[in-house]
Image 1: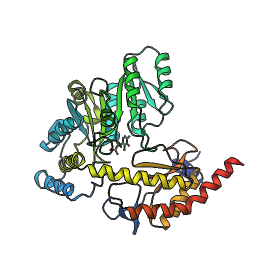
Image 2: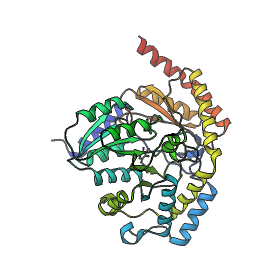
Image 3: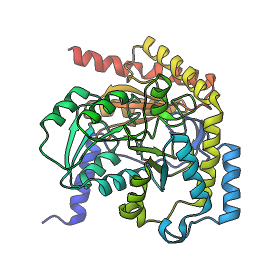
Image 4: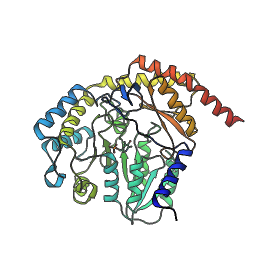
Length: 404
Ligand SMILES: *Cc1c(COP(=O)(O)O)cnc(C)c1O
């Protein structure tokens, strides 16, 4: 019999030989466009701090004032004595921002998604999810015990087919990322709303990467579609999720929805009830981020300029990019070893981009995931493109392999 530690070792060795082994890198500076990683200064193209708020002086100062007022830890869960005025104010401000009756804060997006799905769905229900949804949504659907179905990425016709054929169930949920976290492409929200209406389903949208970045005042994919005349509200999109760890530059997440939805979560959502509330100082920092998100349009405009220029130049170099208008840009290699090699070549030029490999993305779609921040300069973009020219031969090799 193999010992347990031998079993673990074999599976680790196996992972290594597939080019899928993951290592953590240690940073020693603040999250910014330049960052010290393992003692070396690199230009950072892999963070999710899209608006450059994680190290913004006003956000830092709000956090420090929060610490002075409330201390560091919240000391308890929200239902005991951990729910401060800072949390309450942030919830109310996020409700205004999203145009929803109420908002509930969570200490992470992963927990929010697992919490909501396990609280709302059970084995008499059906959950339909886009194949490329974030792991937390897929896990939530699975953990809920509901009949769980995944539809091909963005394929609304297939989703409608599946809904038509579904067995009798009490409630049906349709669950999708707003902006997909590895491809940067977007859900076809108006069509999801139509299908949900036709099949009497509850729609849940997780717009972790859309808030702050899309929509005229950073209201995400919902505002993006509202700006072009679509009517989207609490009735046709009852469960809206956002996170604070991306554009907000802080930490945590929120669910926005009706009075009844939020009250039900407070009563029944175990991952909400049985965990310590986020630090009140983080809530204060997030309140300041929210003000900057709504006020400072130039951050979104700057991002769009960087994204357009990056895409034009990559296409000229013959790269294949994911279909994305967002700061998440996937540069496809297909092969896991090659994407890893590409990221190592870039690192020699002091460019920090992570290779994303299965199981995070489907087999055969390993890639570099390049992300932009409003704080990136044109010079930094130029350096990225120059470095990418050096990994270009890896692509040609791959292409000729496929052709041969
Ligand atoms: C990052 C992310 C999450 C998880 O949020 P955390 O606060 O990091 O736990 C959930 N959903 C999506 C779509 C994400 O991109």
